Image (cartoon, rainbow, N blue to C red; front, side, top):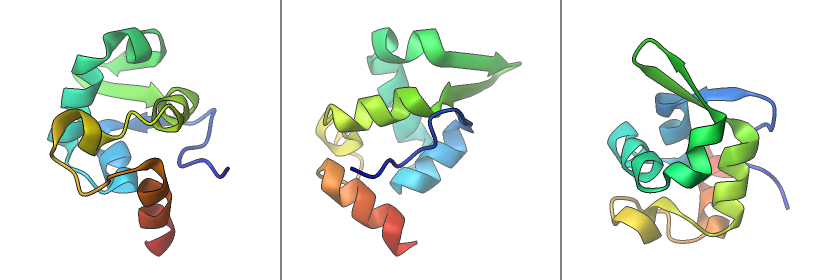
Length: 88
């Protein structure tokens, strides 16, 4: 299965939103909702939060899609997330 994010790259909330075709507010909400997933691989630069790509891929592969969690996205499944990325 293709990955949405490069494992070793560190992504900003804005970059994550662009890749998944959701707002940064939705990304923040999901990070806050699952601290046990994101806490260990979150890096802070002042107020700017960055997440490691391998953590994001694991989150998506476990079908924790943004739509399923918060209802603020048009991404309904992991497959939709990959198709959205490939269209852009």
